[in-house]
Image 1: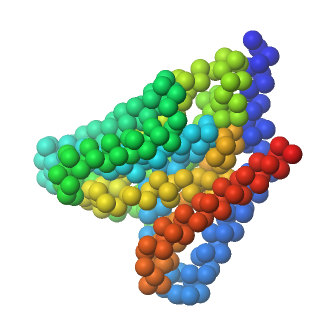
Image 2: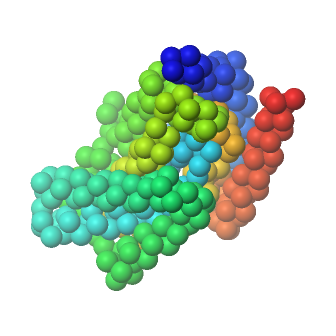
Length: 337
């Protein structure tokens, strides 16, 4: 039994943590990001301001938190389409909890209780996804498409379809608008999430098992990895991070945003694939994800400053996703040639 386990242990070096591949992938996407920033700055100099760059980083923070979990899922050759809806549901149950405990006059006690409930709600949705995928063998695409509708519909029922503003001001001021040494707290939280889960993915057995399952789930199972249990954990992790994103969104806007996350799954999946994670599983980079998550936000921000209709953002992100998948296919064929 020790020999197969030894083989699985080296899977990350073959598929996930080869430094040359990772650096090349990250450099490519970083160049695309720089090109976009330069283009928008030339077309509209007001784009290249410290204030605007700060806004871009804050907007990208919530996406980065969700994209972290999505990276793990896509490395296992899975997918989660429900992230935006889980975010909305988590924010709704969080703010309802805050309202019950005093709302805008509830202080930190109400805020922390709402945060805990919101994150727990995200975990439960993630567990539901994971259990259905791992135990019933229903494809992840179908399961998460179903929970996308279930979570969003449940959020609308609980909120009666209207946004709720009952977030304690102290929470909004400290988390949503707070800064440490001039860096927004939301950005620091996103960086901390990326850093922690980068270490987990690249330096721990949990990360090695994630790569092994994405490379060959049957071989991983024969090597003694509890594949189903690991998948449940991965989807629960995504739920937790979607719940965290939901309560961070409350801090940023001081209200729920029921209709503001319809394209989040597209933006998150695009960022993960653009960042070098293969939709076919077994290979991925959280560094690449951290860089690529800025692209949809820069596009949206730049198009708004240029006065272009925001609908073009969805069109461009969709096109970028198709191109990224095509490039991923070419790289996959080159690796297996």
